[in-house]
Length: 303
Ligand SMILES: Nc1ncnc2c1ncn2[C@@H]1O[C@H](COP(=O)(O)OP(=O)(O)OP(=O)(O)O)[C@@H](O)[C@H]1O
Image (cartoon, rainbow, N blue to C red; front, side):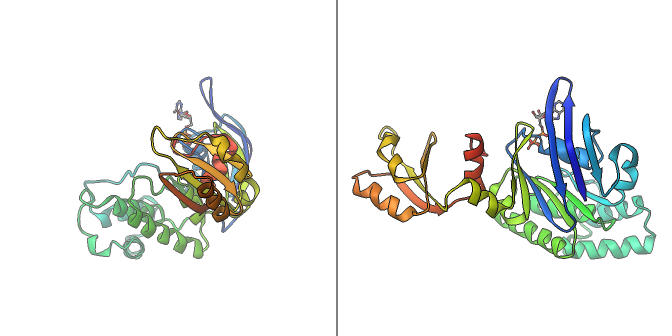
């Protein structure tokens, strides 16, 4: 669905995307995970044919965005980072305007709008204006609107940023539905749980480069241990990390926590207690993509 080789985007002297290779296959959901400024949106915008590449090769649906932008766009759905709904129109009208834009007949536009209202769980809000909707509803409407033309490929730039947990889960549920219908999804996110939930395969980006690629499970197996022990100590009573480094395969010291990477978290935590160390809080959890990112870049995703 998408093939990129040495894909590069420069803004003046600044290289936002530094020669990346990607291949997205039909039917998969593919992710770009990385912190702010990693180059995820710049990459998405090149795939969406709204920003020309500076260098490298790019094929989207087998076509070249440089010469076939309109043909590609007709088969894409694009959900930008910021909702750009028409706030003066009703929910239904927002969908119908797009139907007309894509050249659907009046009758087909009406039917498609009704289907998409149902998909977005907004049928009971169809004839209200957009402004008073919650953030989650606006996001679902933006996604519904991107589906008016029945796209084969849907691009979502940070789909759930700013939403509360319940709204995020509702939205993920809609995306799972699309995936089940065979739509190929490409998602950018800086939420590791979103990447783990949604993506079959992902690339981890940092500073315009791809630093790792694989399924969430493969990345965790390759770059982390099975479990992590998180220790927090009271301010002013932090311990020297050397007192626990031998308990784990690897130790990370963050400003507010010490992380012990080990396959046997409970046993390590018992040892912490046996040594008379008294953390303010401690927990044993399974490794996540956050740990992968930390391992690869030395930083946390939310820095
Ligand atoms: N139009 C532009 N002109 C100059 N620099 C830009 C432009 N767009 C993006 N950049 C820079 O390119 C880098 C990558 O930005 P990009 O938006 O692709 O990152 P991102 O990973 O999507 O992060 P975010 O979540 O903040 O959007 C950033 O340093 C950004 O400041």
